[in-house]
Length: 274
Image 1 (cartoon, rainbow, N blue to C red):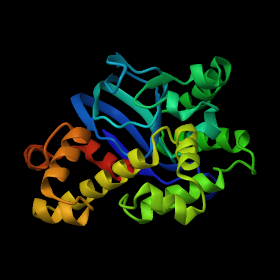
Image 2 (image 1 turned 90 degrees about the vertical axis):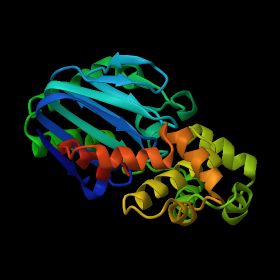
Image 3 (image 1 turned 180 degrees about the vertical axis):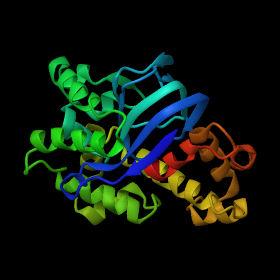
Image 4 (image 1 turned 135 degrees about the vertical axis):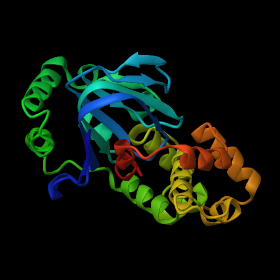
């Protein structure tokens, strides 16, 4: 199985964080997907990929799938022939791409045809399918479509972009009231903009930033107390509660699962997601 992570062309980096391609044969394997600060598009050109969760239950993914902001863990199951492209979409740009209010998409997976039209979805899928086993050409076909589609004037509203950057820079630790004051806006205005463009509240998105910081810290295998402190959790109990709510495991269980799991080509996806 060939798993690669690709960086977007410069003109598309405001919209897409990274891409991943998976091509080849897979023995039955399940990949746990933890909540992150990006939304996802995924294109499938081979055997059906099954998803467990978030809110849709267990089902085979549509050939062109879009997933809103997630705040729960879920799993993807691969088997047989795999030919897929995944796209990590920058927060707040999903609404620009699809025109859907993000608050309606949280923890849900959709057939992209429902969001930007069946004819357009079929055209995009067919254009990419010709290159589905050639990762670089597949990425190029995806990018050609969006270069034609996106206007040079398309951009995230300044207030939302500034808030997202400030939350990331602060590791998700800044109180929302202070954040709004720093940005020169009211707290309710900021929360309304987040609901429309991000899907979660500023506090909810900050929670994901802090959690993803903890995942990155745990990768270096520090003591749990050190990981909690470095990630901005005020005590171990808070760290344990938040981690379990978002990962479905305690930090100790998560580390044990990491140690017990045999290396797999799909491990490369972590660099695309975090």
